[in-house]
Length: 83
Image (cartoon, rainbow, N blue to C red; front, side, top):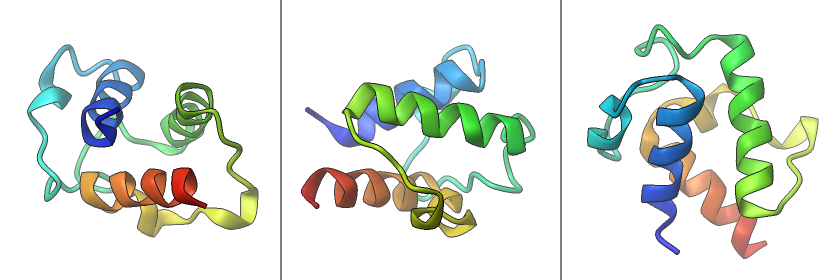
């Protein structure tokens, strides 16, 4: 499984980016840079990641830094899968 591609697919789907999200790189800024990524979208992203990857994200496990960029989100998901 390619974590980066899966994260991009989730971002594209949840944020209704119509394919725009598939061109994001690890350096692409998210929180504060993508207008579609508001607080409700963050909740939807968390739910989608839990469903897609089969893990649970506790309230104390995540903060805004995980959504700083595509790379930080990739790393967060990889950390959850490893741990």
